[in-house]
Length: 262
Image 1 (tube, helix red, strand yellow):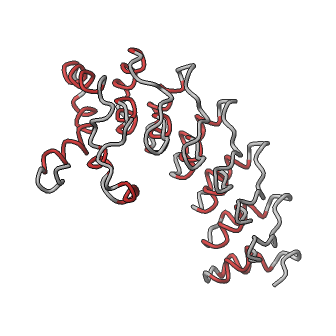
Image 2 (image 1 turned 90 degrees about the horizontal axis):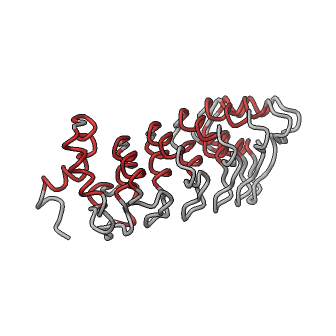
């Protein structure tokens, strides 16, 4: 593949054509985009779109096959093109790319609410389909703090709000580790969510929140089901993580609980 620096316009157009399309929003531009996207599998320069960073482990993969036009339009959040492609039926709405990301995963991950709503309007779309890591569209919405999308997905009975990924982590675990109080409160309002569910390392949502010094610790401690002194598989408790990171406010909060062994 030609290097990015030797063809700067290719790099720019690959990264930002979606932003320009949303700004222009002309019939002619949509028509041209659809001509390209209908046969997009296998030649989209995904290496240029994603750059290094989060997907640096795939830097040598120039093109993620299959990465369809619908994946691309969902990634950029181009509602009219997503609508046209799904109506034409030229792309698999549940198709997975190299990371097993579906178009819905990309829309959820990037925070494109209108695209999420558009895809949820399709009966064939699997709302809870996991990727290679066992993460679902809901998991990514929580990981990114996409509150609007979280509420949309939780409004569908097909979505499991307590589903664990391959490492045993749940949406609540991710929300707690980010200190995202809004998302934590939303999840705790779901009857099927276990607020003390450990992951494969034995760490609970409280353990993750305590280690970061987040105020959601107080919210979690307000639930009877949450054990404030539960150790993980290494024997470390929430207090251990809070003390180890110097999160003194959380340390004081935990020490006020009689169940906690200092």
